[in-house]
Length: 164
Picture: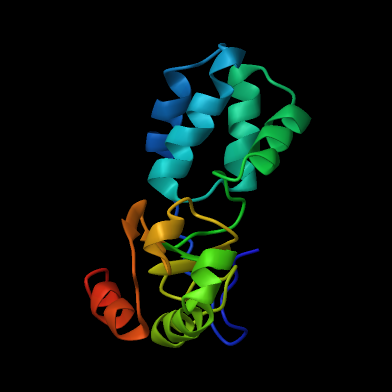
């Protein structure tokens, strides 16, 4: 689970209640819209707080247990705050053989967090994956959905500066 380093608190500013109500209101009484509503809130807020999930449950007339099931089964949803920039480092075999361990060490040092964590300013979240689908470009980093292949620690430093 993403977390801040022990001595820091992650910034968890929520989108406004009015904006959440606006998203939910577009789909009021339409249980089939559950995933769409959760995706829209996740996209704008970067995570799904429990109180928001309860509001979605009530507005769409979907049992809270079903809302939680959907929110926890799909990897796209997060029940903890995420950073503005999501960084994924591939640790699959092809990337590993090309230096992914050194790349991951460099990325951790540069952004100050370990995989599964979010920095205290909610700027970055770091994840690792066993294969991100571009084996011929390894080692690879994906930032906010954009693939950056043939990464080295030095290239990663230059690339991550663009997201600060």
